[in-house]
Length: 416
Ligand SMILES: Cc1ncc(COP(=O)(O)O)c(C=O)c1O
Image (cartoon, rainbow, N blue to C red):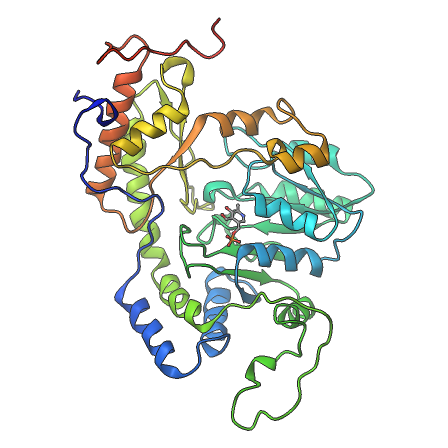
């Protein structure tokens, strides 16, 4: 094995592979140009077309285009009537936005540990977290693998709770023969720059109920009556009116220009990521120093393949995760951490009195995994570079491996 780049060797590639680079086609570029030339770049007809296409793709009755998944989750909580003094059950293994919006409506996030195998909220732990104040369950389809929605739905029904799905990672996911987006009253999707499909920033909320959808259409645009966005059209001289104090959460036609074509290519892009995923699975299967995600589709369930998380068996490695990631970066491979569990973040720890040890499965994942590049913009040759870099690093830091260049291995975790 060649010398690591961080120890003076040659990196596996000469150009840095950005983690989560999007695949933008000529169609997106042409559509953006068309919008720029149209004289209307704000919220308008392309957003509406994008909503229709997205609702059709997810088999959802309604879809609402927004400026982020964060906005989608926030609006869903408001529409579900969650407010001051309420509790919302969710996972600590997620991006902070999932819990922040619960705080925004004056409610308290109640964390429940995850299943270490799926990384998703463990339904067997949810029921005991329900109190008279619980109003909703907010599961996150972590990395793109759908949560056990049958079990979650059953608990919600038994206790009269609303389910709001965080599908920021899971546009393409299917659960038990049902498309994610069509299962619960509300499902939030993200089109952030690194997501499976992107509008640079953006999101979508699918909604089951027509009345809730009607209200949300006004809430996403200041609370103005529904067609207020048409106020600059010729002949649109009718005054618009505030129905309730809403938010500035709308998408723009510029973003929808990207979204329309990203959505049209979503299945093809998924196939690219499935291939990369399989290449990683195959390449890392024989290594005893790392563990692959180990989640496989069946006829009824489909993984959206958003994040490929490699679990480091730190006891068999003489490098910790920061060193491992720095070594990857030196090989010109970007990587990420998903996530540091929220109960360990300063604000949540203080607010909820949580501490290390409270959610052992989320902590184990949060402490030991790193996400490898997985994007439809990658080629299989790129994936092979990632594999070569991981193999090189694992080979070098495997406990008992020959020492190079005077670097001293660190003691094993927990060793004196
Ligand atoms: C699980 C999860 N939920 C919500 C969000 C928020 O998405 P957005 O950036 O579109 O608001 C993210 C973004 O990374 C996420 O990973």
